[in-house]
Length: 177
Image 1 (tube, rainbow, N blue to C red):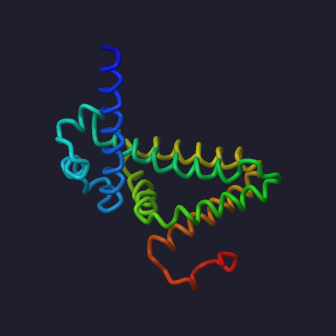
Image 2 (cartoon, rainbow, N blue to C red):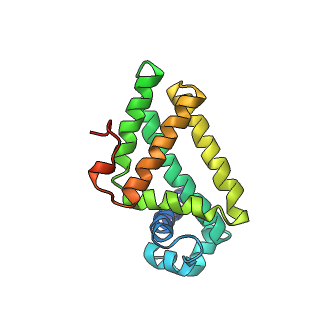
């Protein structure tokens, strides 16, 4: 009996992961307001009512997708900073890790959509909290001061715009060789 419950839990967790991945894709392409749970369910290969078995509403699904994207960045930063001495060196390693993440244009576009969705009062505070938590995590992981972290994140935001717009290399900052 316990074995069956474990298998069912895994299946439910796998479906949840599929749903969040589909949500990231749909929200990245269409934004929060223009994306329906029906579109997300179709992409995930599940029934639309099952979306509501996993998430109470579209807002909560969006926030789970946002947390997933930010957690991937956070994880890449933690891995990059591991074992490196010096805050500047850790920030450099984290920056290199982020450049690799920029290849996933879908997640870059999702980040832009998350900030745009903050116009919705129900999303503003949770997206804001996640961003502030991320800022604090970058400071903790790097050991850098607030000004250095601010500059690091501002640089990353600029790289997001470059990636989102698929700008030519001439728009890259000089140190992006």
